[in-house]
Image (cartoon, rainbow, N blue to C red; front, side, top):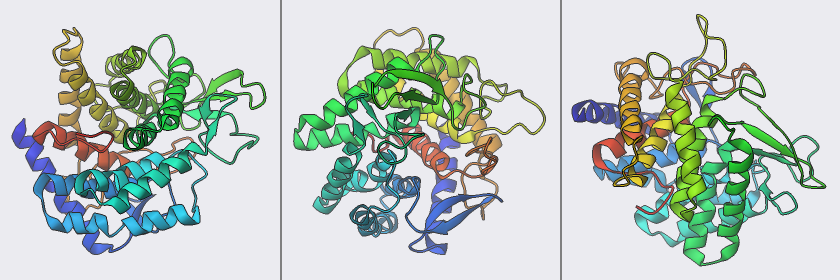
Length: 378
């Protein structure tokens, strides 16, 4: 399938360059209508666009992508300094794929400094009496003060990286404790997952699992399941704690066993499937990266499920390219159609998702050239 991967990569890089030229200094935001809304750095998603630039530079060494990515570092530093819209845990998404990525590719000390500042900002969300990193809102927020969400697993690599850079135990210890809490309370016995879980802010006791973007509290939101596959695999890479690898495998098995006929998931595994039920191509792209990580982590282990991971990965990526990618639409801004943001909230239930584009490109480059994302040192 190498020719399929390479053609899809060239199409993706062409669209990325086209977007950078058309929207200089702007960042993509989710909007309905098969387009991105181009604006400033004030959401949780802007890092994905910068991460795509660094991947593109590593693949072809085109200085255009390097210079385009470097031009945003000051913008991301300024956002930290001014505390713009950072009352959430997605600081890892923002800075792992911008500042950490730049440090890893160029060894720019300003990027390292910015990334460490971001890690310190994320540490401020640690709530020791509950043993969690609070997902959303300010401390003691009545709705979200004791809430974790499964997405946070992809924010933890920023803390693990900071520990490796500084040797300071606080980064590792907090990331480890949050991952343990997530493994215990977000992963169900059958390998499905809760999107979110609530703890009592006073006693720290567990209250209940729930959802924010899934079909219902007891259902399995597919993007959350994908975050879990990749996130627990990354937690295992940093800690070698076997429970994290086991959690990733269990979530992967459930994901694969519940794939629809074309191997690209709907937005929730439990939603009734009818004509027009939204897919989430971004969930399948994230899961593909998680499966690639599992394949590397289990290489040579004799794991009997490795073939299942590999087969599902190839089927899903082939379907994404053939049925969801914009490869025959040269003017398209997004790489993947039919991603969903917040279906129950009627927010972009069927459109481009910049994180879907990022993980799709990450998976393609890992398949084609062994180029990985920026979640750990290569």
